[in-house]
Amino acid sequence: MTTRTPDDDRGVYGISVAAELVGMGVQNLRLYEARGLLTPERSDGGTRRYSANDLDRLRRIGELLGAGLNLAGVARVLHLEAENSRLRKRGRQRMARTDDIPIDGVVPEVDRLEQQQQADPRVSLDEEWPTPEGRDGDEADRLEQVQEVVGDPDEEYEPDPT
Image (cartoon, rainbow, N blue to C red):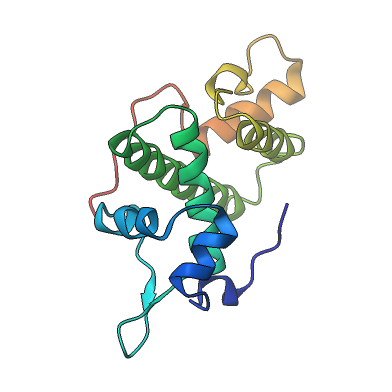
């Protein structure tokens, strides 16, 4: 896993360099921007400047297109991935605030599943979500406490209106 730095958001690559680095045409990058799939920084003169994060996003767009999605599908997947990431972060923050609940073994399990899903997006986290059923006493208690904090993974999610 690559460690990200604050400079990963800084636009440093011109459009032709960015296109070459990700193996795409310059016109594709312009199209993806026009469709709202990414928004590179602009220099004072209006020149597009792509960051390392932009390059990662372009590579992801290429993967999704290669898997057969159209641009509308790519936009939807990228939105859902961002929302998923935000929800995971919120869940981790909730767990961190509830330090009296022993969660040994649960966070590493979630991390493992997330890595597995990143390697193969077809992997569903819901299928392997740890549940108290069929677990021994202490482990079942810990998982029940975690579910109280994080919520039921099978419940319908309602986005935060803020």
